[in-house]
Image 1 (tube, helix red, strand yellow):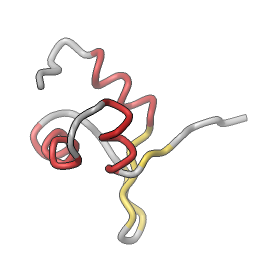
Image 2 (cartoon, rainbow, N blue to C red):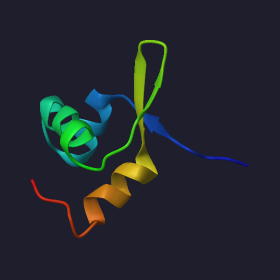
Image 3 (cartoon, rainbow, N blue to C red):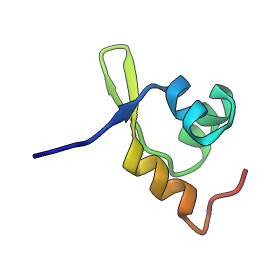
Image 4 (cartoon, rainbow, N blue to C red):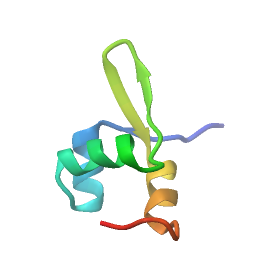
Length: 59
């Protein structure tokens, strides 16, 4: 069973205690991946956790 949790950009920002604009910046300038279906964008919580632990992560 797949228990993936996908977060909106706002939920992701709250999850890691940053602003929503920081999440947008990370997706555009760093290696934080997201999916887009129609006009809905979501970030896999596992991907966000991986990004936050990665050696290239900087705030």
